[in-house]
Length: 590
Ligand code: DQQ
Image: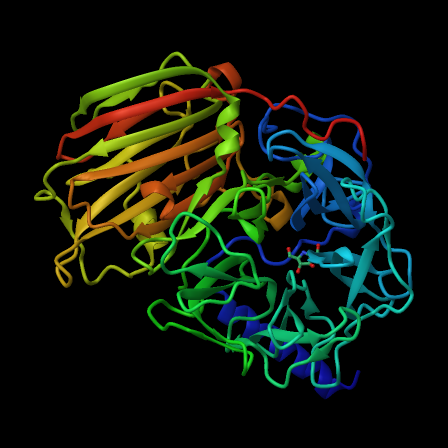
């Protein structure tokens, strides 16, 4: 490389680094620690290990791949390191379930073995092709580190377990052309069949700093041609990983739609995972199948400030249509927030969040998410509370369940919003900044109120999940902030200045689009040792945090309801359950 090239590379790095500093999000890219990728796991530490979230017995996992419902079984594939607890040596691991709760691990579906994937078998999807059965589309990396799109077929499509997969020699099915970025071309979506006789799939990419979703068409699922224009792109958003593109109904708010559904009363959702900050956003919009263009509605931002499936530790998500129950289900990966050294010591890293149904909210302005009903089969011991006032500064303990492994649903009644703080126009509109300044201990008018999870009785450690209601002087409507704040979650400190030695204990936040006309707001939180997964206002705003308390663990963890606002808040109803461990969670294989 000549001197001028070196200078331009350095300049580019400085500029991108500078411009990224203003963009908030979680860790950038999969951190690559070559020396640690194959460090074998001696034993598995269970202290913070979730009990009812999807996990293999050990090692690193990331993106959910597939998923699909086929011949009576739910299949989940996922990115898995066969050798250690950090990212690397990635294959497609494979599990099946009859109920989305209990999981049986099967042998891995695909691993690097051919010239078109010897450098990696990365994320992708499954499509059920009539007459052929399920077909995997995935990204292979070749030995020059160019990303290619490949397909794989089951050896025996009549086997509901789809145990063995073949990678035909006529792969790859798509290669980057000279106009494209070969190291940013990945994660093909589930394909759909259109009336014009073509299958279509979307592949994530970027050109310079522009995030891109390319669309490919095929008549036979083998020969794919890139459409002239990307289906959508957006400047300054960087690489679009794991795009997801699906229709939602504008009239039926109970059922999901399959990808090939065509009808007048639909909108499309385009979700992309932003590699620069490792968070995702989605837009609602209109897809024109003739022009193969997607145009966002324009009601919500198409970029960094966009709506999110989950405002917390959640990435590389993927939906699928469940033919059994006519619903669209979302899977997403929640990474660890612990130090890399401790990930290796505990022998595992990464979980899949509880699968969630996805529907358009009746406001038609956003989606709503809710844990699949099957998860309720794990509910055990149960306590309830009704019509209980919590005055300012009060904290009430929820006793009689196991607070480190629980499902809690609360409906708060706040009555009048008179005392709500004014939404100061000088506030930055970023919910995260607001949550940073106005934590759970900062007294307010209406709120902060909510749950204190994984806490010690003296609050040396705790993870609060709460609402704070403001009066928006511009709209004259309440502006509701929801926070899940990991800052006080653990006494554990960083082990050093490097990224791998740091604990990630951020506050996460989102606004909740409710008018609270009836004075009520609900919160549901699933707590699973190091997971705090919360659904505000029946799933309008969702936040997942990963936390590693030192003292508030297992039977030493406590759960409280609190209010730090001058307005008394009533617990209209609270139902809390112990959550049991599923009978089967991938034991054995791998
Ligand atoms: N993870 C995969 C990629 C994808 C990224 C590699 C997202 O295919 O873009 O493990 O987390």
